[in-house]
Image (cartoon, rainbow, N blue to C red; front, side, top):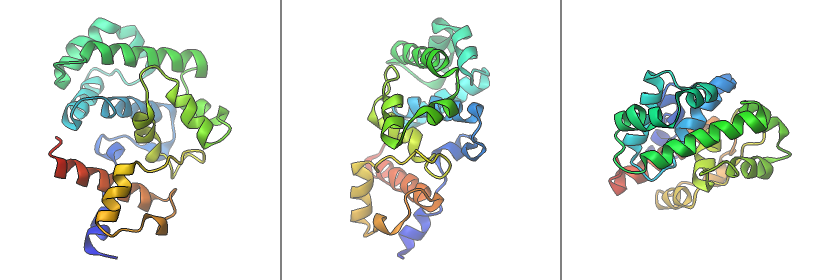
Length: 200
């Protein structure tokens, strides 16, 4: 194993950097990660996504009902503005509210229930993809760090992750995809690409 691969295998998960405990597998921690994934999957820098999540955290808006009670105007300002949004803040606020509403109406606010109702990994991805404004990239962000704890979470690594691994001579096939080692390696490869591309 080359030194770069060894280092990447020790990478912190994105959820860990935000203080989210996915191993707990509680609806509270899972919703925090869904919210963070929606922000990380948007057309903004990783830095703004992180700051915006931290803004939700400061204002204690980390549950679907609390976000819905706060309302659209409060999400636009102060939440999004504090996070550093200068564009898409209104669109993102609408997206977050509609996701919260769907989660409550269809799954009683429980992501564990969503997982339980999914028949397999494809159905799980399809259910998440049906949330307003959630696409394949956001679904991948949300599920890739849940592989070790959710039996049905097993998204295909993004093409850019595979490409980065090939450039570094890392054989992803030698890893069990649902292992924590693979999750950490994947997070490291994504960060490596972002740094090389100059993304915040």
